[in-house]
Amino acid sequence: MNFTINVEMGRFSIVEREKIERTLKGKSSIDILSDYIVFDIETTGLDSFYDEVIEIGAIKVKNNKIVSKFNSLVKPQNEIDDYITELTGITNEMVKDAPTIEEILPDFMDYIGNDILIGHNVNFDINFIYDNLYRNKFNVLTNDFIDTMRISRKLLPDLPHHRLIDLARYFEIDTTNNHRSLKDCEITMSIYEQLKNVALQKYVNAEKFKNAFKKHRNGTTLRARDISTNNTEFDVDNLFYNKYVAITGTLEKMQRKEAMQIIVDLGGHCEDNVTKKTNYLILGNNDYNPILRGKKVLN
Image (cartoon, rainbow, N blue to C red; front, top):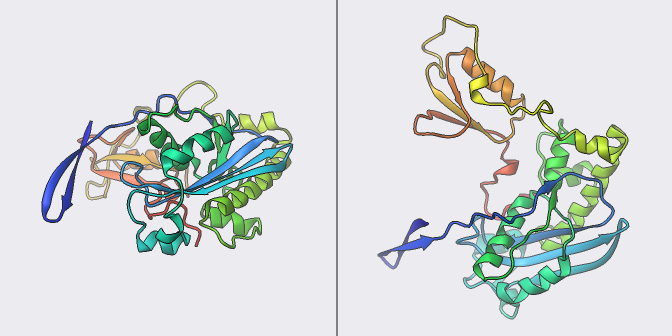
């Protein structure tokens, strides 16, 4: 259990926060599909414990054609703040008669069935839905999923960023009325279809495309302990000398192994995870770790 301190009306209270392990969560997949469901949610923030879903959208695709759509506003327990209203256009008045998350989740789960889900930075959406299902004692979300952000990073490495807006601009996709679930689903679907074309042009077929995502085919995984240096003399005044450094996220300008080698060559120590000894944490591309509220920054 985790504990959180709340401050309200000058009083302190400790809230017990259950950690949800998500052991039944589906697998992240890479594939070129003709049948799938694109889905997207709008929320009041980034944390599924504190923040709430205020809209769910989904599009069902069969044989590369849209066959149906699912969309519903969701009434939160707490008021939507001005920032989220400005970002999404969703007001408290709009959701006052909407179903609650407990009421809409069964309908959403019936709609998606066992289909593979596709979304942009989709782990965010998956985790939010999973946690809400778990807390409301429903069967949790076990569908496998595909992340268009992950695919775009592989296929379009020269793009400086891989947000939804960046890809929409790259593929010249209309983003009018974005930050609404169904519109974001439409944008994501268009991006996925475009990425499929790029993948086939680059890799010829789906199998070669999927194989391109398999890392360390010799069965080994890059570990900090595997990085060593032949240097025997170091500038003791450099930033990394005798410091412990962890790297997270995807680096824009170089591979992680290259960055780790530079650190070790300067006399530093690389770590696979943050520990008590860690002096520096190097953050990679924030596409995978958005700090702005509202998750998907489109403009």
